[in-house]
Length: 450
Image (cartoon, rainbow, N blue to C red; front, side, top):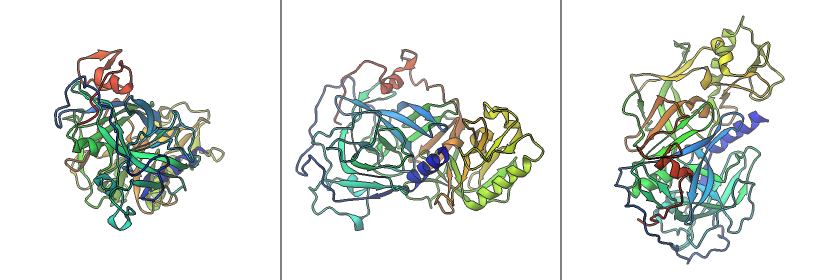
């Protein structure tokens, strides 16, 4: 059951296809313009490209199978839990417009307030090709649809509303951002218990790209996912470390809206496996890491051969993941068997520096049955062809940075359980910008318009 859920979630994230449907936005007319409730700002606008926003992350690889963040939307602001996905660029919320098909979620659906986005908006054009544009006239509402490989989907319309954010320079600001208002969802059993998706893919409609175009942050973001659960996410480059970070250029042949590396060689126990030319996609929407069939089978064979003579046996009765092993007694932590498994590493041929290390903790989990399971799955069987994905399990305890300004991806070891101290003002143990984005601080007025 768990295996099916995690693998399906990967396909959903990686195989997102954005298409436009001429669906009618119930309760809204294409002639309606956005109403804005202007409040006096508590502080001045953030300096152009001079600040960042930081958010707490919840979730884990197992047993939840996803990481999520809480964003506030609207004025007055209401919280929504969003699945963090670097494999897609459109952010959408379940929406009462009214809701035709909605799934159970942590919060009531978002209610639009005459704030539809029209076809003449450049962000509408960014979510589909010119050949597939269905708009008959510029003043039509911009409908969207997202369809997933597991037959899940979301239909809705683009809307614009305030996203109250506390920036690291102390400013509290509510920039109007475009996102999807989904009123018709078809979901699978793998759907995470969230209110929608935070799309962080490489596209103009991503939240980070919109903030950059407004001059609020640089087109940089990063996440730090803890193996103990939780972590933090940030928009902007204030938290990017100046040392100990390994940078790698994004592949010019990268899949559209996905973050792909150049070719990599797989190492096993610091020795070459002969597997070279592996293009890797960094995808936070995938719980586990996926190798193409050849790389997967070769890696599993190396692990299996290396376990000969060690006190682990295949656990055929544990279906948490395709391959699990059991010890003489139930295991409590990967640390209990860490010495039985050699580290993996990805050595990227386009950088002459430290490879991406994958210690046993970055590819193993302990199931609810007390067995150790292999957290690298066969991507070819999952419908990914020859592509390889670096999922959450392999990005844990690392700060991973996506720098769209310089077209590079970076990573550095980090304690992701400790929230970053971005200034000297504290409230209940949190730095103020961090605390305010968590909703810890008292409600403040904010500037909604730029």
